[in-house]
Image 1 (spheres, rainbow, N blue to C red):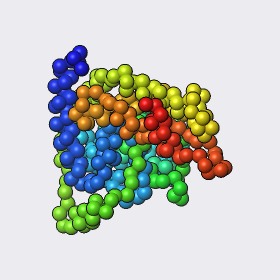
Image 2 (image 1 turned 45 degrees about the vertical axis):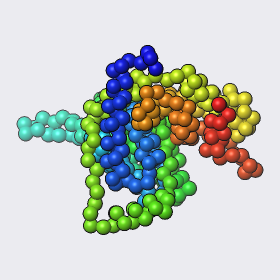
Image 3 (image 1 turned 135 degrees about the horizontal axis):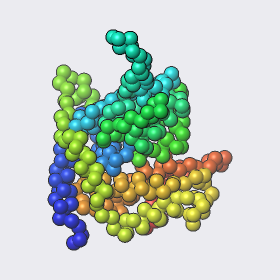
Image 4 (image 1 turned 60 degrees about the horizontal axis):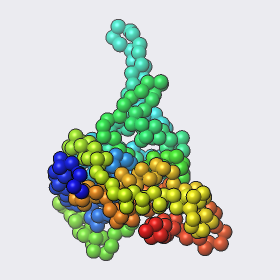
Length: 329
């Protein structure tokens, strides 16, 4: 660490204090979801988007609201439904008539023009509507009637998704899934947390999160994440994991037999950035192997596909990734 810029060391120390305040503000209204909060912050600090997967009623919407407030970001929300159209997301042109009778088209911006967009129940909309987010998520601008419109900086999408086995949902295309830096599973709370939820959310008092930073501070932290050094040990672990997860390159017979398609280089980029962001969240100067192990499944779980197994003996994707992480050591 002797060759690390002293200015970066000072920035990391300051960032740790700021991010601790952010997590404290979010913790006022989101209970018992420390891992989920950390993963969501990792995605945002890495400059990416996150997909929150869980049953209704697990505080996914509440989490996004708290994140927007604590990070000092303008927020927007789109409720995805089967009849939602792309124009309902991006905006549309309308024909205006001036007082002197002149007519001209005017673009009315859609709800996507915000810094933190919540795409609620994204898999309830048709694939055509889901794909309207693709260009915006990847390129941070939209094109309507041949005109380019830039989105605010920063811009992040936090989408919620119902479990795919529920009725009335559409599978997200692989190309769109790949646009999400992390897939975050939101599970049911433990007994003590659920007791706290019942007591503190049904009374007359209601806790509110307060801003702990501003949008400009977040942009600075995102630049800092990309300046953090990554050791050769961590880099090699990421490379080994990504390549062993591809059936064409893997030496693992289970991967060769059960995996249909593996992670692309974008998955390695996502894992590298997420590891840096997690290290910053925890006040460290550089990512460690523990960061790779913690983030492997959220980074790779939506970037791989398993072959159909008529026997039912194949491991689940999560178990397979955990085994690959252990074998990559």
